[in-house]
Image (cartoon, rainbow, N blue to C red; front, side, top):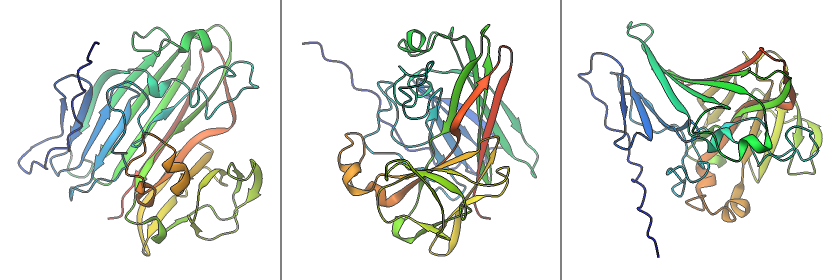
Length: 321
């Protein structure tokens, strides 16, 4: 029997360094993760597998993303928690001529991305650090199942920008092929909350949505604000351009405000007790009480990208000041 070495444990982000003069970027010993930190203590950790944001820490040392205790962080499968990148299909689309054979949520979250570099702003008024990651149809790290199932030439640039009060993730999808392709994009963000029973979600009143828990029926949100009291899986199409935030309010205080650029949908997801119990990588079993997914995406239909053209989208999660 061949015994595979155990992957290095996922360690907590280092304690804030008060003496640092500028943003810093460091790699794990196995070059599998990159961590960016501001001198004021804020930090973000990204796993190259999937370009998945694993952790986001605010200046007070609090983790702002939910990450399953059983999440695979060794590159063996997609990560349960953090911010996985969904591309080129959301869920599955068995009837779509191009994406019909793709696995759930596509292959971006199961490919190893390349770290392209960093850029920083060191002004006191705009302290930030941006990490860029790349994945293409020619990349060595591309999931080997991708090309046979989705044989298009493409290039993805994914950027993660950390500032003192926010985290921004953005993606650029470029069509390098000689024919158009359809795609969907989503940022599957797991936000950490103290108690889901005390959470309200604002900014969705009057929006139409597809209720995937109720037979994919199309409905209109009449609750203001929205509360989570059971399994929830809804694809919202809010009015406006995304500049009006969808906010998470806990015990009467706003904890997150999410704005969008060119991402017309917002998925709200919580598995609740029964579904969480059926997920091998969801831990602890009652972890659904401490998370809610607010997922900006372009998934209500398909984005047709012509040869040489690009699709761009972004989300910004802002913390209260």
